[in-house]
Length: 150
Image 1: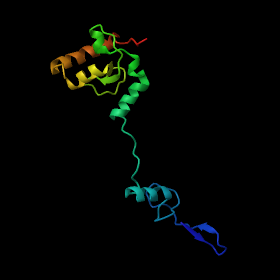
Image 2 (image 1 turned 180 degrees about the vertical axis):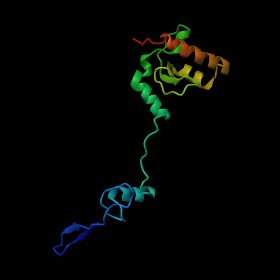
Image 3 (image 1 turned 135 degrees about the horizontal axis):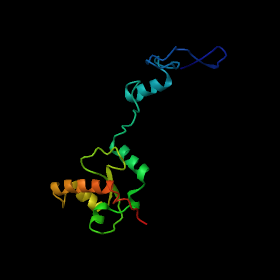
Image 4 (image 1 turned 180 degrees about the horizontal axis):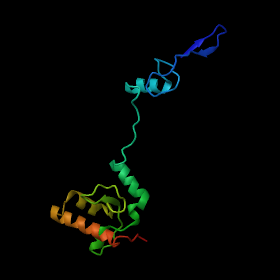
């Protein structure tokens, strides 16, 4: 907060230290520093605001795969390859039943059609889908699905 002295100059009034535990900044308004006062005004709490992102959120996991392995479009669809069809992949699909934390073991490149079939089971039954998931993981571990599209 500002105040003027006898010469008409603005001087900062000392309100002491910010009342938020752990903060060592000078208070400027309502016994809080500028940061905590702004958060209190915007969010209703001086300690609210941005939180650390969840490292296991959907976007964090898929971004990790993208950084580790590059875009899926540089690979061929693993379902189509089983039928000897060479289709560029479009998405990284999480192998069902896995937590998705390992970008090399828990994801496979699929074209959009195969990804939708795999996720929503529009053609595959649950038994076939589960067997396919196990087969994909085994083939991936054996290095069958390591080729990139030229």
